[in-house]
Length: 157
Image (cartoon, helix red, strand yellow):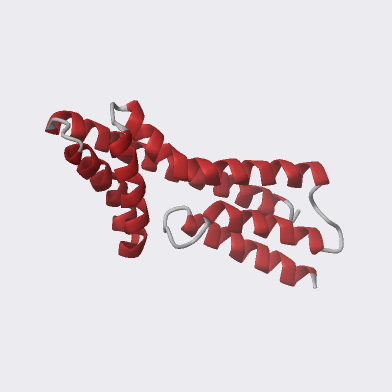
């Protein structure tokens, strides 16, 4: 039965890595479940403390994934309208696939800033902040899922 848990864990971590880039899949939570499934093996490889630490990291990175593009918009001079635009763009981008997720917050922040009568240069800078925030979040998710995958593989030996 251990083989089943090991294979399921690997599949979940791999889907989690893919989910770090694709918006339809919650990457870090899936990778965490992959680690959690390993606890069902006859000899549980992780301590309770390790599992709780990974749970905390998963929760934080998931929250940051939604918050960082909005923060990036504000950090690069965006207004509340730009932050709302980035949020709406992110939500609408979910329906347009990977490119929608990348461009949605950017275009939403740009539209929000322009609708708030910001000059185009300032609006573009705020939209760029949204894009930087999105890319930062994606890279952070990939790193977290990759490290979880490393711990999973390490647990096999």
